[in-house]
Each structure stands twice: as C-alpha cells, then as structure tokens.
Image (cartoon, rainbow, N blue to C red):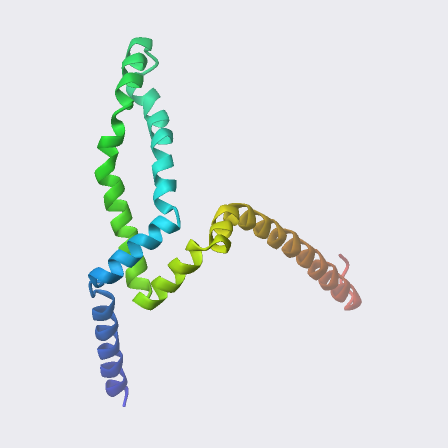
Length: 162
C-alpha cells in the first residue's frame, strides 16, 4: 500500500514539475508584458537608474573631483547601457506573471489595473501598505498586552507570584 502511495506521489510531483516548466504561449507573454507596463513595474525599475548611478559614483570616483566631473558627464548616456537589462527584466517579470495566471486571468487583471480604480490603487498602494502594516503592528501589540495581562492574572490566581 505504501509503495502505491509513493508511486502516486512521485507521478504527481513529476507532473507538477513538468507543468511549471511549460513555456507560456506568445499570447500569454504579450498580455503579461502589457500587464507589467500597466502595473508600472517598468517605470519603477527605470527610476532606479539614477539611484544606482549615485551609489556607484563614490566607488568609481574615489572622492576625486576630476573623476567626479567626468563621471557625471559619462552617466548621461548610461540609459543605453541599462536598456538590455531593462528589457530582460520586463521579459522575466512577464514570464512570472504568464506562468502564474491563465491568459484570461491576465486579461482580467490588466483590464482592472487599466481602469481609473486600478490606477488609483497602484498610486496609493505604498501608502496603503504602510498604513496596513502600522495597523497590524498596533493591533498585535494591543493583543499581546491583553494576552500578557490575562496570563499573568491567571497565573496569579493559581498562586504564582509575578
């Protein structure tokens, strides 16, 4: 009986592994790329370039003003260097979305985020996440305080000195 269960489990693992390795269809990839653009993931990545260049500046220039001037002049066309990485990033993220959702689901998600309500959600998502995290911390702290109070009270009723 256990050999039969092991065999079935092995077949299921094989099938699951094979299913996840399937390449998304070109239509799914195109829809996923459109979703990545709608979600403005590409814009967020593009915004990282100036930050990356600022982090590299002291490493490359080594606090030498003459190098800093040339570095600043050279970074203007650096977007061309960044372009292949940017394209690869978009394709890889699109592949993750295409592998995670059906074509119909991708279309539905993209349609929602393309609407004003979806765009508003995207614009406010950072603030909403921060507010939600703060609420979670506050509620967890209150719950922990109450739990502590009740546990101490219960232990005192059992004769423990706390």
